[in-house]
Image 1 (cartoon, rainbow, N blue to C red):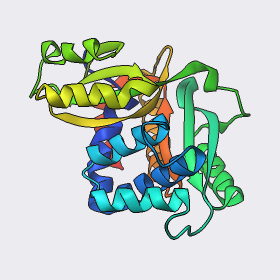
Image 2: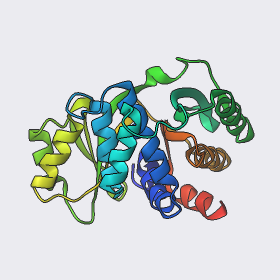
Image 3: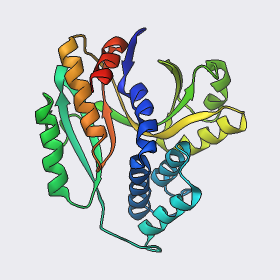
Image 4: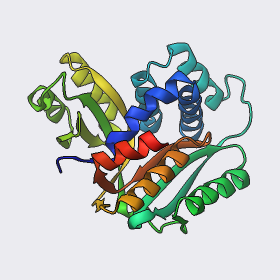
Length: 252
């Protein structure tokens, strides 16, 4: 919808600010370590790790940093504190479904802080399974729409992508989760500059939030969750006016 935006097209703008203050690399390293520990250190046999590597590369994480994080997960490096993956499900203002993926070394602390964020910003933390059914795991690749057209991305379909669409100032390619790395490689070989590549939980349907007060409260909740040190990724099924997003970001 023209003049509207989903969370998927907003969060990549925020990633640049996260990278500047080093927060993003810390989160990327945790994701690499946990993915390697849960599966293996071989991205060819572990598509979750392959996706974590693609995401780290998208944000220019140094190769040595990526390998050190993987080594920690496989036990070849300094193990550090034990980190586990925890999923939180809840609802934000306007009835928006929110799925939070956290990587934490203290589940009790993180759970209390995530619950506080939902409560503070007009949402509610739900039980396991309350909203997860509304999302499907996909590979998500974004490309700058000012640099490339949808025709440039047809090579992605040939490589196994399911869909190519416009999303605000980005073009978005959706793939089966296990085909993310292959599709990204095909785009790179075709000369397409990829802005980001990662696993994402795509909503089956979106909720339009038209009330300005609810939209602002929702953006404050999304910001609070996304900026939490233990949160790896946040997924939501909203669609709100760009003007409201800009006003909410300006007031933050």
